[in-house]
Image (tube, rainbow, N blue to C red; front, top):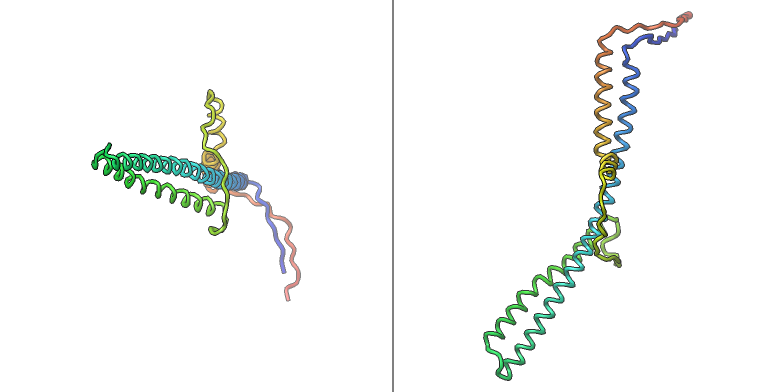
Length: 195
């Protein structure tokens, strides 16, 4: 039975570079997780605003259809008393017929947006939900360069690339260190009787 251990006195910087590379890899992974969280938040907000937009478009389409139907009814009444022509009546009916499909598509858009939001949030699709919100533009203010620079500095994708670049630099150090000779310090060796 024998026990031996060795301790490198000089490894050409490989050990330090390997440690730094692992540290940068951990930081890059953390930035990847942060990026995933931000993308999820973005997608939920996007789906929410798409729902609000679909709701507004539905209201506009329904109002247009109601106005066209009201106009058609007026033209029909005028036609019955002889104050409008058959052509005017046909034009008003065609207008109502042309506005029905967009109104139906707009109502379907609300359903699609609701299902998309439920899917992102992990809510069962058959669960009824009530979505509250208003589609309004925020007030626009002066955007300074500092805000843009801060936003770019906080982007996980850019920080992840920085860590990957640092990892590559440490890998170069490891490769250079492996070309250098290594000296090992050998500790005491114990040996006993072997059976």
